[in-house]
Length: 507
Ligand code: FAD
Ligand code: DLZ
Ligand code: SF4
Image 1 (cartoon, helix red, strand yellow):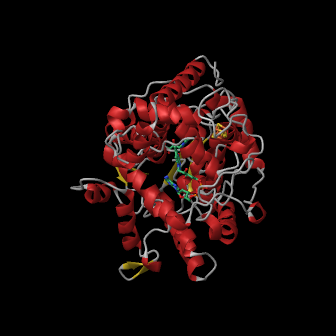
Image 2 (cartoon, rainbow, N blue to C red; image 1 turned 45 degrees about the vertical axis):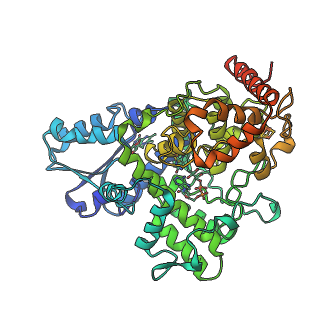
Image 3 (cartoon, rainbow, N blue to C red; image 1 turned 60 degrees about the horizontal axis):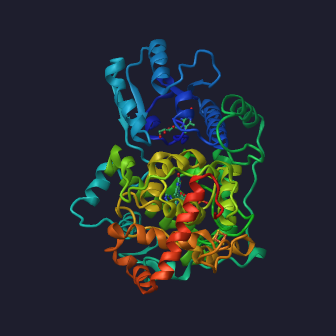
């Protein structure tokens, strides 16, 4: 499958190139189960074509169906049916899929084709589904931090025997500085499209012209070799300050100190554990400080592995959760970027242009806004799944529905990531360039995030009022006089009414 582009993938591990047919397929069903951003499809199809060439070069017999092949059956199952007819195989071997939808499809193949189907665990992750379920069993509360410590012990990463290096598991207190040092900002490598990628881009423009996003300036790596060059660049130039500026945002700057490696890791071009070992080596060689390396490793063996565990543990119904009973449609400007809120325009504009935004833009700008306005979490999930180049349901859904929208009621995160404009102002230069005033809470120039934040807390008090981590904001709300509370709620109502009418300006 398109997100299994790895020579070491479990489906090929004991296969003999002499009597194995490797099947790869570009299919309409996968390309349209949501309206993926054009760059996401272009990246994946080009990476798939390059991977097929690599396998052929290593002696594998690869049968690759292109999207515009007239005999293309249009789905994984349809293409397997054609291949079964062609080859009458003794068995089908497949590495497990990354989402419930495809898992069910694959599970149906044994009966449908009367051929044994060997579905193998995806060894790119530290834990199998059963191992994660074992970890979760009997816990009153699951928290990423405890899981992460166990993964540190399991991998030995940054460990001194049984103790964490530096005497602490987590150095976040030293991290999260606003970005000041533009001068030292690293530059990621651009990978101009080669002939193969240009051909795929044409195909995408022809077949998916109605999908969101743009291919102008497409510059993703599409081979392991090029992805490796970006790894090298990140380790050398960005990792040392990755911790410090993890949460910073700057106008016009889409990379900052982030690695921009998630599309390659998720598609299989890079191995997550290997990246962690590389980062650890940078620390051991004295080239990167512990707070940065620990922060980076935590994102991968902590958050990434943890959200995947939750996705499979919670089952296919996780997607239907809506703890806060949020029902508002996602505003149209999520697909156009046309809004007068500068922070939103930056995050959305960059997303539509490149199919990437960094974590704090996803969580504290677009995600925070959707949470505050009470957007339907299923719609928010669909948007994140279609718009980001690194989005596959196993990783996107828990991040969106759980972490960002609190629709699972606190399973993934202990409190909603809701914030007023003050947070965005502290972590970015956005507010200084905005037509709204972040210090005002009411009136035509007030930052919309401010009234929406208080309205969100007041509106959801029944469900959130007992959350210990929200005790302080609720105390602050209770301390306000009635006129102020009333004015804030009116301000929010006016903004939401304007939003429902298709504008983001106050009436
Ligand atoms: P860096 O900042 O350099 O981080 C290093 C690596 O850590 C990333 O490459 C990624 O592999 C991993 N990582 C960091 N945070 C997370 C996390 N919360 N969950 C999983 N892995 C993490 N990430 C995806 O890979 N796919 C998604 O579809 C996705 N959807 C998201 C939706 C929302 C609402 C939010 C808040 C976050 C989402 N993330 C997703 C997590 C995170 O935003 C991206 O992994 C990150 O921005 C990728 O850019 P980077 O490689 O430069 O990351
Ligand atoms: C995301 C995606 C897209 C757009 N297209 C294809 C495709 O044509 N062929 C393919 O093998 N995989 C594709 N993918 C990735 C799959 O959707 C992914 O493998 C499943 O979601 C299971 O994780
Ligand atoms: Fe965003 Fe408000 Fe700041 Fe404008 S003032 S950039 S809307 S947080």
